[in-house]
Amino acid sequence: MQFIENVNKEEYQEFTNNHEKSHFLQSYEWGEFSIKGKHLIPKYLGIKDEDNKLVATILLLIKKTPFGYSYAYAPRGFILDFKNYELIKEFTNHLKKYMHDNKIIYIKIDPDIKYQDIDEAGNAIENGFNNKKLYNYMLSLGYIHKGFNKLYEGNQPRYTFRINLKRPFEEVENTFSSSFKKSIKRSYNYDIVINNNGDIKTFCELNKFNSNKDNFNAYGEDYFKEFYDKFKESNNVKFFNAVIKPKELVKKFKDELNELTKTLETAKKRKADIEEGIKRLNKDIETFSLINQDEVCVCSLICVYTNNRCWSLYIGSNELANLTFAVTRCYYESIKDAHSKNYDFYDLFGTTGDPKTTYKNLAHLHDFKRKFGDEYIEFIGEFDLVNNKLLYKILPTLLKVYRKIRK
Image 1 (cartoon, helix red, strand yellow):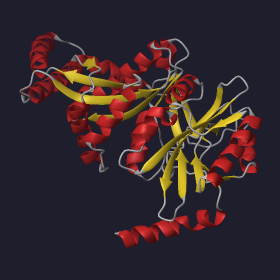
Image 2 (cartoon, helix red, strand yellow):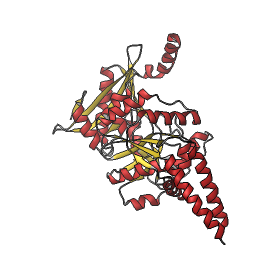
Image 3 (tube, helix red, strand yellow):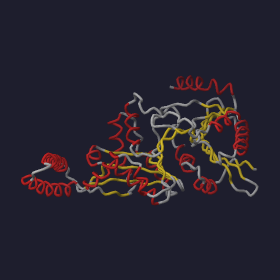
């Protein structure tokens, strides 16, 4: 087999898009996007077989150090058949030589490989599936495992929820929690219109609203525009925007209020339910009457794709989204869309491995994503492949001192 140090764009994209283990973080587009403003160098490496066809690839994001060396991160590791241990070994040996020849201290990978079956609490299921054989084999090749973290300590989340789309959509819906299905149903009361317009400015305004509410630093408009433009080139990104029409809703709710008021006058049963409905309608009328716009986008979700997989990645929403259940509806419509396009799965891109964590934002996020149902997945974690053991050990200290001096 032949090691390729610079796989051309067309070959790389064809291989990564069509491989069953491909991940958007391993894509050519992600390599080009992620280097912007970060002084990273993307390298697209691979192995070709005797028929001159790629059988393995890796995206390296290389970071130069002030000391003439560099280190690298390969988001979600390499793309190959992880059941083919000989191929893993050969690719690893080539990477070791590549690191030595290019003064790379180490390469970090975090494969998109399930580690073991877990229950709702994140604990291993007795006699369930596990990938401990692969884990031990990686160690035997010289990889250093960085631990089984539970939160977001690594470069990527080590846990996620994935919805299997290779079945009838009715079965997919059956995995949703009752509260999730109820939210979807209630969203139709607000005549939400879903469109796929790539409106970066509106998305950023909604995303900033989330960041202020949940106390995190939002990416700027330039970040999302660059991201969207890169993935749009290959049609591997899509917006799902929830739009409401306040003035039309006020008219609709006033008509419903009149009908419900008449019903209350003659009702002999369920008066409490009718009164609750009247109360809700009055509140909605008051809320939407304050909005002097014909249309308002209240939620915007960005999904990203490979040829056969889908991830929900970024979302922005405001208070009206919560009132109208637009967040749930955006996710629902994006799941339906992915199913109709015959994707293998829909990934919610990250959650905690400790559902009872004291970090309230993470616990809340986990509880929301859990309502989608289906599989709670634990990945195998991060591995470092080390070329220079001494520099690997002291690099964090050296960089810390360098950055302090530079500052």
